[in-house]
Each structure stands twice: as C-alpha cells, then as structure tokens.
Length: 445
Image (cartoon, rainbow, N blue to C red; front, side, top):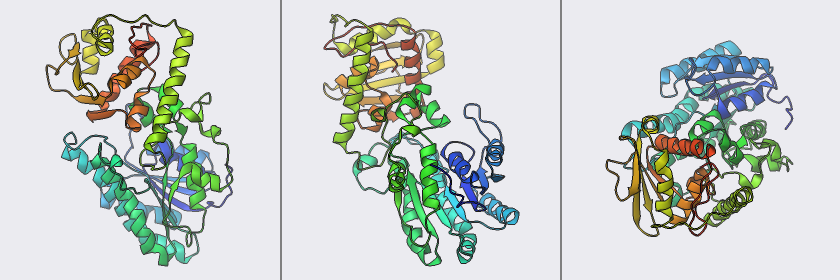
C-alpha cells in the first residue's frame, strides 16, 4: 500500500516501538515524513531479540522521518509524562498515540504467578490508560488546530465467549482492558474530536518474538508480516478523527475497505499459502468449525508431502501408538538434552483418559505411561489422534493450540523449548512406526 503523505509532520508517540509491530507502524509513518517518538524500555540490546530505541530511531530517520528515542517503562508515570513533555518540546506538539506495548503469558489460573498477572495488567491495561491520560491535553490541543488526533491501541475486539478466557484468563483480562479503553475513551473524547480505535491481526504476525516463542524460523509459514498491521494502522490514522472512532478494526478487513484484494504480499514466507496461516486469538468469525477445517486441511497437506517423500510405515507391534512414540524418543535422550531442556512434561490424553510423561530434567531422561516422577513443568491436554499427528509433524502444535485442539498448562517457555528440541531432532533423522497411520515422522514438530 502506497503512502499518501497525510502523516507528514505529524508527531506520533509509539509505545513498544523498538521492534516488531510497533516499529513497523512507525516506519510506515516515517515514510510520510512523520516525527516519531520511540517510547520503549530497550536501550541495551536484548540477548535474543534485535532492536533498541536507538536502532529504531536510525531506521526511522533513514526512512525519511524524524525520531526521538525515549527510555520508557509504561508502568512508570513519571517516565511517560517526561517523555511526552520532551516530545512536545522537541517537535512542537503531539498528534497520535499508538498503545502497542504489551505483555503476554498464556497460562491458566493456577499456573499464573501474581507477579506475572501484575506485569500483564500494569503494562497492558494500566499502561494504555496511563499513556492516553498523560497525552490527552496535547491531543486536545492537536484537535483544536485541526490536526486529526488519534489514539490507536493494539488490542482485540471484545467478546464474552468463554473460549477466549478459559485457558488464559489473566492475559485475556489484561488485553481486553486495552480494548475497554477504546470502548470508553472513544465515547468520552468524541466531543473533543479525538479518535480512539483498535487494530488487531486476523492471523499470527511474524516477528522476532514470534520466532523465538514459536521454536524457530519455520513458524513463518503460518504468519503474515508486520507490514499488514502497519498498512492497516496507516489507513486508520489517516481517517477523519471526528467521524471514525470507537472501531475495533481487523487488519485485512480495513485494507479490503480500501480496495486491497490481494494479500499474498504479506506472507512471511513468500512460498507459503494463505490457507496455512494461523488465526490469531479473539476473533469470533474464526468459529470452532472453521478452525477445525484449517487444522484438518494442514494435516492432510502435511501427510501428503510426507507420504510422497517416504514409503508408508508398517504397522507397529506393541502397546499402542503413544507408547511407540516414546519408544522412538528414548534412544535420543541423553544428559546433554536434559541439561538443555531442563523440564518435565506431562501429557493428558482426553479420549482414553491416560497419562504420560517425558522427563528431560533428571538423569539422562525418561518417558512412559503414568504420572511423572517429579512435578511437571508443563501439561499438554489433547486427544490421542492429535498426539500422533503432532509428534509426526502432521499437525503444527502452534495451530493446534491456537485452535483449541491442544491445551497447555504451565510454563509456556518450556513448552516451546520442547517443540524446538523435537524439531531439531526430527530434522536430523528419519524414522517411523505407525498404527492407523498416526505416526509417520519425517518432519518437524
């Protein structure tokens, strides 16, 4: 989508703008010649994630904008107030606020420490509220000058469907807090001519953080780039603030309103397909039936690729497909793997009510039926058929989780570590045992 120049000279304050979606939105505005305040905590390089407020500022200036990097923790009122006042002093005002900073922990109630709960709520809900509050006097001044002021929150449409709460109620509450700010502030600020809207992706967005959480670069095949969020945000921010307010926009839907019909340009993997994209959370139009169709389609496609690359496996003898999976895993366990993974995994199989464990925390590792010998760091709940599909590479765990086929309780980081470890192991060799075609490895987890 081409820039129109409508954001030229506008002063834009972006929280969490040192990388990812926040930086993409800032870069899009910079191409118009906008003045961008990068308000984020990352002043020093992160060991795993690229980008600081200073590298972001250089990119913005190279793109044609002006930049003001500010060290800001959105939990700190003084830092927010000081950075906004510095922005006004440097650039002469403030026209747009992008509340992008957010924290996430996809854990159930028992597995969410209050420190994590507080972190999500103070960054997501309180941080959004506080930044908007501190910016409000300057946004009113912008409105009085006819400069089309906007607040845009990176938050989802509100829905009271239990499925969005049941597996991670703390995160949903915190993220919906940002959306409730849209709902209330849009009405409150309407008389002042200040627009308040939300933007949310229809599919997973490929960022460095997503790559890290998703177990590597292969997650790109299920994602779009952050450019689609940047283009959608640009459309919203250039609309009339007096009339376009209180909207919960989905990225591709808002672009379709602008006449964009082709979205393959946004695929994170150019060789990927729209049908392989992983739906994001909180969108009710992705019904459970539709999500099941996505999962099944990916399963069929993956199976077809594997079967064309290797001969079908002979039926296994023994005590069942799940035991066969663990028998295949046992030879690969060693003290080095245990040291790198350092976690105990439990598997609760819904249809036959069986319990299984994978101990990669003690000794040289162990696995089998029953309860884990020590407390599990992560518990996976799924059906036996989906267990086989997942460990064979036919069903992507990230897709299974996002669409409700897989529930994860406990340490999400450890869960991702298992996925990454299995991907590396399966890439290094080809092996197969199968019952009812549920275990045909030769692919990544």
